[in-house]
Structure formats: structure tokens, C-alpha cells
Image (cartoon, rainbow, N blue to C red; front, side, top):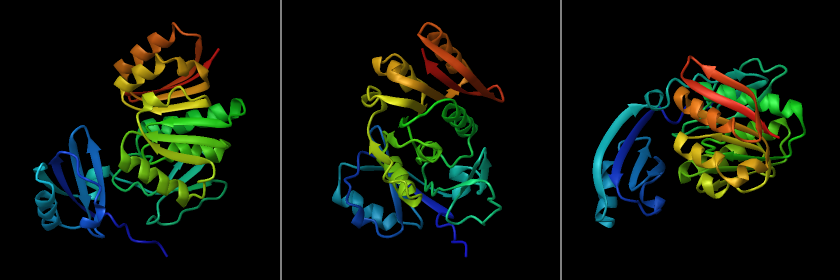
Length: 273
């Protein structure tokens, strides 16, 4: 029997300041806290203004900026699970079962974190992963900007034995961890919260970075970038991708393929020489 989607309606409270991690204050309807710069975005399954008032009383340095109510699909975009991408069937705990013959099944609960598999860059990254793993043996993978952990999970399913999934956002790292455990891959993937720039020096056979351009620019200029056998760079708008491609043309690397979607999004698969 298919479970019910637990995120039908979202109640979001935007707060200036960092909330202390006293999650017991919020109760069972609390989904998570998305922290960015000096702001906190608290997500709930039901209206929780009373809890927010108690929080503001307990931490008077916090300021409530705004509150929002929206459906889950309005926040995430239409999450049409199950998704069939390449050899993978990506589904969720609340999706209707589909024909998965000859498919590798992956279970994802994205919560309020982006990265359910619907974005075109995710599709291209999955195709790039399949190409990379078909070319050579890849044992170690570094996934920077992991989001829900989907690409790390796919890398492990394709043969990666040691995968490090990193995200700057604590909520993303926690969501990735839950999905890793849900797929029984906690012995091969570790999820960590931290800056991508702090992990780029780790040696690995494959680098995955589906990440903002300003961070990507720093990654490709780091010494550790050249210690990767393969790299997948994605999340780039066309003009950003053109800049990255120009920079890569000066380096001892080979671009195996560049995917473009609707003239907007670009993804690179490359190899160090």
C-alpha cells in the first residue's frame, strides 16, 4: 500500500537570524530549518505561528520577516514520481508503483530540499554518470552540493565504493543522510555538512559538482581539481558554462561531452589528462 505524501501543505516562516537547534520546541509538524547567510526558513506541515511566537520570546535576537503558505508542488515544482531516467527508476515513499523491470530502483524523500530528479541538470548528470562509469573503474566519488543525495546514491549504484556527499546546508545534508539510509547505502556513502571549497582537495576518481557558478569558479581553480580522474560540472547557465569551458580549455583536461538543455542549462563531463 502506497504511503500518503506527508508534505501536502507547507507553512514557511522567514526569520532574520540563526535559530538555535532546539527542535523539541517545534513539535512533530516541524519539517526543518533552511539556513542561508543570516536567515532561517522554518518549514512546518501545519500552521505553527504559536510555536514561532514562543521561539521569538526565547530568542529575542530573532526577527520574523514574513510567513508563507503554499502547496508542496508550488514549492518543489510538480514532483511526478516515479521518474525513469536512463537505467534508473526514481520513486518516493508515497508514489504509485510502476513497471520497474530491468531498472535500478532508488527511493527518494526530498522533503523541502531541491533535487528530486526533475530538473534537467539532474537528468544530464545522471547520463554523465552512466557514461563515466562505463569508461573506467571508479571507486571513489566526491559529490559537492549534494542536495537530496540523489547523485551520490546513483554513483554508488553504478559501482562507487566510497562516496562523500557534501552540502553547505545542514538541512540538505540531513535529508541526504536519510535517503542514503533509505536505500541501504550507508556503508558506502557518507553525508557531511560543509563548504564545497573545503573538500575539493580530497582525492577522488570522480568529482560531481552541480552547484552555483560562483562556487564552481573556485573549484576549477583549486589544485585538488586536477587530482580527479573524471569530473561532472553542472547547474550552469549557458553564459556561465561558456566561461567555464573557456577556462577548462587552458587546463590539462579533456571535455568528453557538454549537454545543453533548451539553450539554458549546461553540464560537462570531462577527464584529467
